[in-house]
Amino acid sequence: MNLYLGSIIFIIGMCGVFLRPKYFIGILFSFELLILSIIINFIISSIVLDDILGQIYSIFILAIAASESAIGLALVIQYYRLRGGISIDLIKLLKA
Image (cartoon, rainbow, N blue to C red):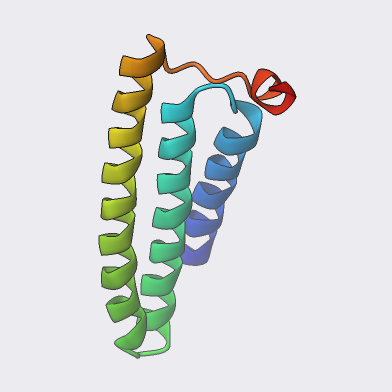
């Protein structure tokens, strides 16, 4: 039953990435949801299997996710300063 929680959060994150690809901050938050759902699944499976290795992996993944979001937000700030907005139009980027 608890693995359903991670799966639902993963599906919500995927919907956020593919249904709203125009907003960069929304994409970053959706990626964070994806990573957190994977962490939840690691923790639940490590509890069920009585193994500490999944919890150790979760700590490492969480540290990497924190650094990824910090770099992503720094890129958003620089993009905003350069362009004056953070709205992304992928069709214009692909044509250029």
